[in-house]
Picture 1 (tube, helix red, strand yellow):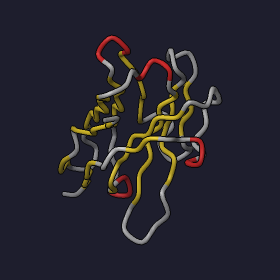
Picture 2 (tube, rainbow, N blue to C red):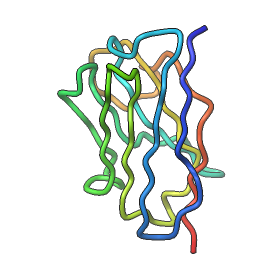
Picture 3 (spheres, rainbow, N blue to C red):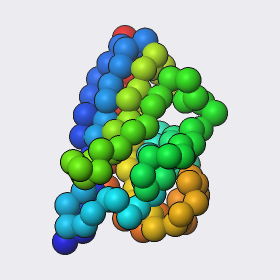
Picture 4 (tube, rainbow, N blue to C red):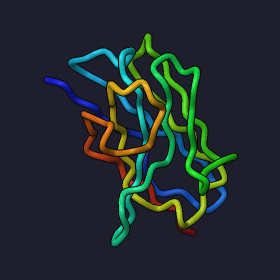
Length: 124
């Protein structure tokens, strides 16, 4: 069974940091572009970041540039999202997704597998 599982979410104060993990089971992440997305209540799903199959290319949404860093460890079959300088507007459910597209894109239509999400809440 192909599965993506996110972890690392939680409650953090503004200015704090979290590291999200996206672990794959049932398939090898090496062949996939991986994206992180988020969805806040009442809002559309938003692309946060994505990384190419071997990590050579990354993209970030404008709202997270300079604060978030995506990375991958193919040996561990895991992708990470390091989130620093968190703001209340970063509060959302964060999802990782895997796509076979070679384009490093945050177009949700290019992703084939999705995790169940992990809640991130930034609040004092």
